[in-house]
Image (cartoon, rainbow, N blue to C red):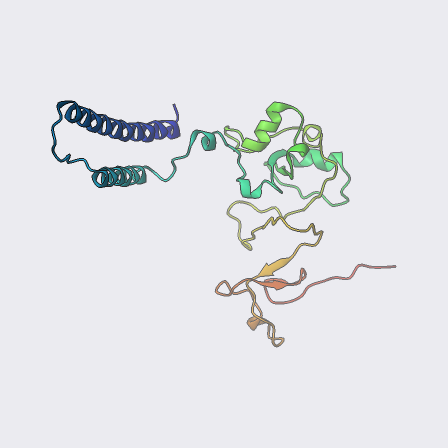
Length: 247
C-alpha cells in the first residue's frame, strides 16, 4: 500500500467519524423529541435549531482543521494514478521522452555534422515527443516514455532508434555541447517553451551592455541579469565569427 493511499484512508476515516457523530446527535435529538411528544411533557428542548446549526458549523470547522494537518503531498486516488513524468501543464508539447544511442542515431541519419569523440563513455541522445500519437505503438514503450522507468540508468528508458522514431512524422534536432560533469566552462541551461514553432535558437548571457571596445568591461559577469546576445558573442566579451571560404 502506497503512502498516498494510507493518508487517503486516514482522511476518509476522520470524515466518516464526524459524519457518524452528526448522525448520532441527530438521532438522539429526534428520539428525545418523540419521547416528549408521547408523554405530553411540555418543556423547552435544549437542542434548538440555532444550536444544531452551531453544532454543524463546529463539526465542519473541526474537520477542516484535521484535514489541514495532513501532509501537503496528499492526493486523491484519481490524482495518484497519474504518474506521468511530465506535469499536465507541459503535455501539450512534452508528452513523453526516450533515449537512444548517440552513435546509432548519427549513423542512421546523415545530419552533416562531425562526431565529437568521448573517451571511455557512452553518450545517449534524448527524444522528446510532443503528443500521445507520436509515442511508439508498443504499450510498454508508451508507458515508459510517458511515465518513466525505475532502473540504475535513470528514469528515461533506452530503446533502439527504429523504436523511438516509429511514429515520428518529423524530427527536429538540436546539437548541444558535450561537457564532462565537473569540467570548467560556462554553466549553460536550456529552456523548452511551448509557443509558435521557431527554428531559431535565442541566446541569453549575463553580459553588460556594450558601450565601448574595452574587452575587460564587456566580459561575462555572474552578478548581472541575463540579456539577449548574438550567437557569436563569447564570454570574454568579443564577437568571434570566421566567414567561410567561398572559393
